[in-house]
Length: 500
Image (cartoon, rainbow, N blue to C red; front, side, top):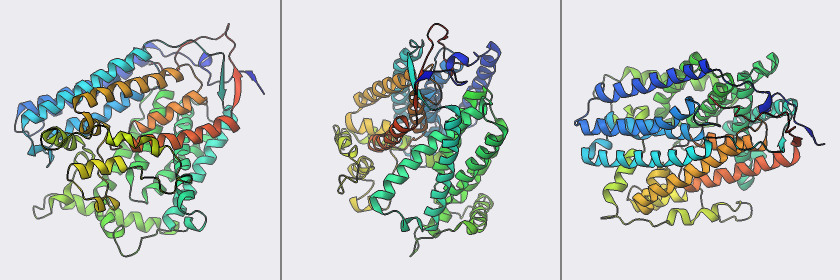
């Protein structure tokens, strides 16, 4: 039944930010920027100041969108600012931390790559900023979930996600789901989990959740991250935490420093022992299923390997492959340097081959049993540049990222084209959700883009496939769970609920 939109999450009922809150965010921004610049300039051991300069250039370009957002000059959810920030730890910092593959290239190559990355970020920022400088006209109506229905639905989603993780880790999920059905269900649950984490964390930040729902949400969120980490893939739990933290900051306009510090310590500690756990349990004769009652023992073993890792840091006999830092494992600039070094002289450009497969990835596998793998574009890149043989791709995936893929296809023109596409896409989706309720169609779609902004190793094929699958999930929510709310135009005040 259609009705007027008179819910607390409507923009007309959200308080505007005080000048003091903007100043606090800017203080955090400048402290972060200053710390990065001091580290990159003085606390690194590089062979050339040119390399340091390149790292700083990327960092400046990556921080520019965040400055525009923190200062209130850019409106809406910070999709592009968060996307740009990922280039600090994937492109800037690996230049000055003695990454074993990065240091094989000359300082001149470092500088050229840095200028290319910075140009890509600046061009994308300019295009994105054009869409988010001013709020759009307030629409006459929205499709949205009611607060009560939304809270119950998303809490239920988190419960189902936990059950899915437990069943999958225990190896008994396949009693109910097989092949194509399992893939479709997993994609749906992952998309819903992202939405649930963001929406509930935002409402926790705005203090719109009741005390009981707040406690239940935090318990479910922590439980979900733990059950997801059992798979020895920390990226899922880390992404969920990042999305939830961003949502809470937007809602509360404060930085939850203590939870962030605790989470960083836990993720860093477990990350250190992840390789040993994978070597022991991933590549055995039989898959290692973990039942829920075995979780304490499982994490105790994991913690033991992590502790051994730190104890061996001073042992020169320890193989360097076992000492990879977070920055080494998260880096993708070494692949970007590879493409710039080899193409087009020794290895020709792909001229759009990894993009030509995108239409095939939009067809559901249930309709096309012979559908190509979503990482097919990634595998094409690895084989083309001699990093893998075709048969190797069935056991190992090398994360390239969107920028390296664009250069491998079209060189500098590809990088510029990617900046235009992403700047336009992130700008338009952000503008679409400005002034929209957090439980509206617009905001839920924007949350998906926000979550995908953290996926630094995805190629275009993986990105498009994941977006298509998640969009189907949101489409079902829009059709079956949402209702139309009409905005009382004379009384409505159009301003941005995420403006800071």
